[in-house]
Length: 395
Image 1 (cartoon, rainbow, N blue to C red):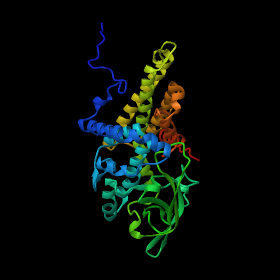
Image 2: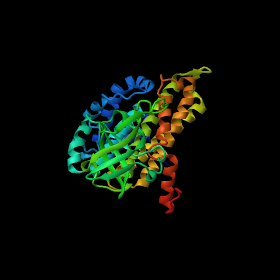
Image 3: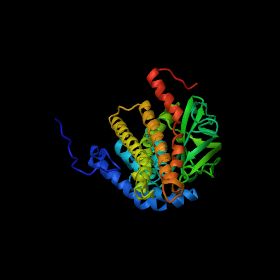
Image 4: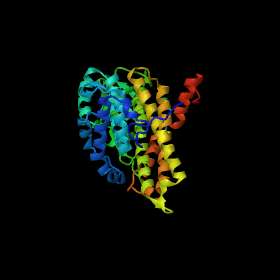
């Protein structure tokens, strides 16, 4: 005969499976530090920033002081944190807003990572310390107006002229573009795709910010315009030729999204849970109705499953065992689940769910972008499909 064991601690609706017990003291400290930063510095202003469509660039230095910029990189002022620690930071930042996680992700994984991995020692010394401090902001120029999921078709060109390079082309949907001090731009050279570090004050380089967005409003999104931008050989990343370069950067950023999406999901779930316990209809809280409880339970299940998946992938990454299709599994599953949670939470809040008084609609709109950027839902599906069948189905 078996007997049920009474839990020794109270069940936490926000961490029902006590996943925190699987984290180290250092990981918990990083999680709690970023959570405190979001509570004190992000949440008080995010409604206004989102409504006005701005990102407070002055907070880049604060993020740098916390060691969050390029935190998973070693040396050059970077924290050298584990993949799990980086993931936890992304989760807590996106619980505030996707714009803040996007800023940190682009700075560290898309702008700093290629310099760190493929740059010369001179390039690393010149750019990385300032970027780690938040004194310099970077962006990543890959996507073009006609080439998103198929970057191999890019039209941007890099042509040799004596000892210099001349870049021409347009890059679109570039996060941080309008507030950047440098751009890591990928262009087609004679020998293949090459990466270049372009100081944003370079002659022929200009940006056009994209306005009237209804998603990721607390994030600057821009078009980069390159018209006969002349760069010295020292601006080219010497360590990589081909799509391996930009795709490896995207894989780093996608890992952060696996965690970040769960932060947005958790914020929506917590808002819906609090609302369900205080909103009365037909003489009792709506949380007392079976349909509402089922919705809340489904949210809890997906958040806990997604967090366990993210943690497992993080441990694999720290052990050097993770592959790109593994990252696709996490991105595909967790962003899809987070978006459904946000939509369900909006329904629980009713009309109140569409206002900025609650975070749900803001997160839901943001997640619509997260669902398609850094690899669409369809592309990650096909990446996993190719991994299990051995047959590419992109064309």
